[in-house]
Length: 111
Image 1 (cartoon, rainbow, N blue to C red):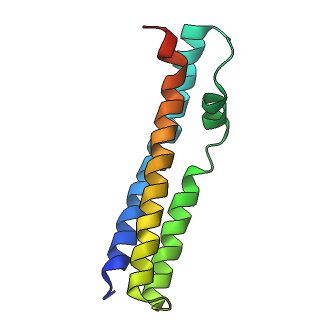
Image 2: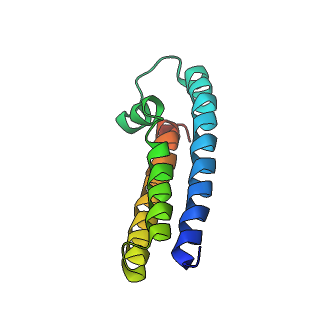
């Protein structure tokens, strides 16, 4: 593993797996809290989607593993891998942000 992008993708794979596991546990806690607070009222669409689709979090882990494999094989050049890494980071940060916003949307009228 002589390429630096290999290590970056490995780090991202581990962090993405941690995030996916953490969000899965957070969804369970959020469902209980929302059911207690709102007593069956309708939830925002983003919140419903975040509760129903927990599998999409593991897509980031799979993409990172593909990035590690491509980096180890050395097929694309290193500058292409750095560009893919930057694009993936931007997309993953946006997904993380919108996931956390979806968890907090139901509580925006309580203050």
